[in-house]
Image (tube, rainbow, N blue to C red; front, side):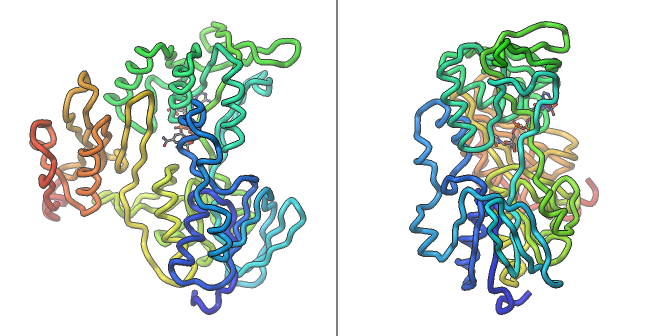
Length: 429
Ligand code: NAP
């Protein structure tokens, strides 16, 4: 793919990944046209505060805007807001095609970047379409939720992942009665291990949030006007609620990729250069399923990551691919969650660990869990320990490990403690 042949790039989706593709294209010297289409009417904005500061009324929606309208104009990025791309058809062999939006606009492009994100999974039980069953994905959802929370007193949150717990904490801080219902045994089961899950359960409960694990919703109950009144759970109980907030995961948006003939498997399959199966189209962010070459000795496992850092890093790689450069994705995935006044930061992916080390004391509300595969540090969860987190992630980025005896002793600083991983150690591990 030579830069000279690419004169127009279409970016579908204008969230973190989309905006970073556009900005990186210009940073990398691409001078052709860039059109970025977003179904949302807002200027692209920062999502993490939606479930926290925005819900609690600490900030207004406008403060979340990533870049001003003038920025896009200055950069020659043509923003099309409030229009959804409905179809993508090919024109020729090399990734070129035509997009059609719901407003009837036709956009032709030499290359397309799919930064279309994911959509919240819907609660599939009788009555789930009642008024007051709400989801949180975008700015409009968050504003609706904020306004509805003001009128509500009893909240049921379905799902014990990031959305569920961050919203539960925000609602509780607003003085609401909050119950979280989840089928799993522990909170954030997909993302963190037992120590962190247990810690956050205790903290939620001590703030007055009721946590009901191993329980599913079987029905949403509403009144004669269709307004939600509560839920029925798998143990036959009924929990009264004025609002039911659902956070049960997200599915990648793959329809456009499928229509464009791209391979899809839990997301749009891309290589480590963010190139999809046609070798021309790129995808980045929640919708992309990419091999992660920094899963160390465990090989390049494919994964689809739903995190801001992943969206940003993949977008840079994708932009490079669009201009004909080949920068592989090389980063340690990380994400964070703020609940009440606690900060959880996770680096790496713990899948495949064979032992773990607890650093610090859970009772002191400041600890880290380090996950090892043999001698290799592959992931860590840090609670209220940002300095340790930065050092751990830095070590992992350099391919270093932290000796377990150092990790286990919180009185020893992690600064300067990381050591290169000996290849022979890896082989014998
Ligand atoms: P999530 O973190 O995947 O959590 C989903 C939760 O719902 C899990 O507890 C899961 O249980 C449970 N669940 C799954 N199916 C269910 C069902 N049918 N009924 C009840 N519970 C069910 O997803 P999320 O919290 O909905 O978040 C959605 C997206 O927003 C993700 O992309 C997330 O990363 C993003 N987000 C991120 C942050 C952050 O990084 N701080 C904050 C907010 C949102 P199991 O564990 O048993 O599967």
